[in-house]
Image (tube, rainbow, N blue to C red; front, side, top):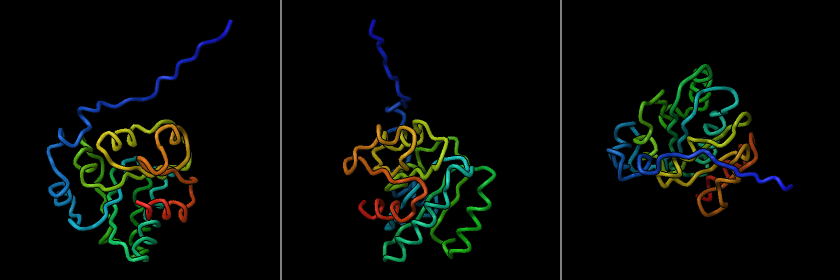
Length: 177
């Protein structure tokens, strides 16, 4: 006989991850994380591990700032690679523009503060719950083309995908938004 296969994707509670259920609006959330009210906030939520490659977002922020965009980054999470990403931020002179907020029990205020959600993974990504949570809160997303990213993103509609590790392409996709 013919096999029947059903794919059941990860899901998130879209009532919980919604802007109207978040206790903070964007203005208040930005104040909480010491972000400028008038900047474009690019953010990510991920453990600081080599495969998450948050340094790629830092490099994209530097490139966008060099092109005259008033961008800042909000990095949520903790882990063994955090110190090396913090060093990269200092080396690139971006300490005023990149916020590290550690692990949060409730990521909704951080997502509310963001204009764009970014996932820079270069390996070991399946179907990102963090991306789904951001999308549930109405954030356009730029995801590395790994795991289920192409199943989540409709290019130009809710975000873009880019080749993992390609900072120039990541920067171009972010610039579109």
